[in-house]
Image 1 (tube, rainbow, N blue to C red):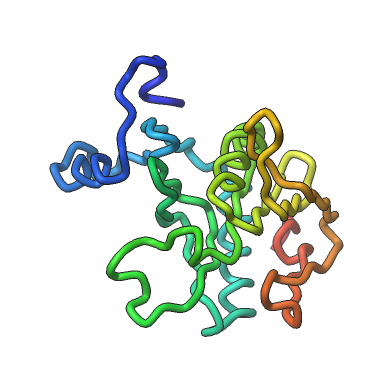
Image 2 (image 1 turned 90 degrees about the vertical axis):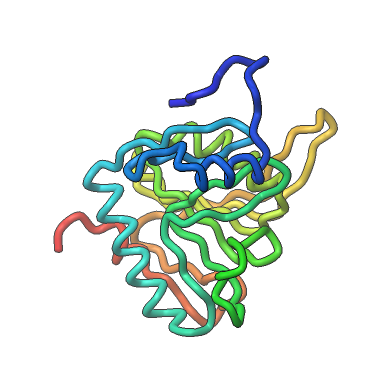
Length: 196
């Protein structure tokens, strides 16, 4: 649910958003993210979403070990006015572990959203935002169709809209390589299986 929806409403910069956080504008349990200057409520997670995210985090940390940092539901900075909190982001190692600032597009290897009730939003708004920010690898764990959607090659079309030139769909029994770590494979059955 969007908190600010009026087209004439104030849109926040990243700096203004951070100032609101510092001033305690949001309660401790508020789950919001900044998307194109708007404060957007983050949808409550259903059990399949939580289980999928937890399994994915476990598998990626196990596979990547110390080759990259795997962040879960932590902010990434996409100037000029977005700070989403994707379900998973694989980011490049940095000496300070991003203590000096959240990862930005050049730090990001893969962004992942786990989608059930937010599927349309993740396939349209988030996809466009990530493509515009030059994020080369965007994945959606689609819990509606039970598949992995992998988007690569961001571009801007003649109408000025941002999208990805390539989309691949993988079924739950597939094994997929992790971008930039093609020797490492993620077994999707470990993520999508409902039973323990």
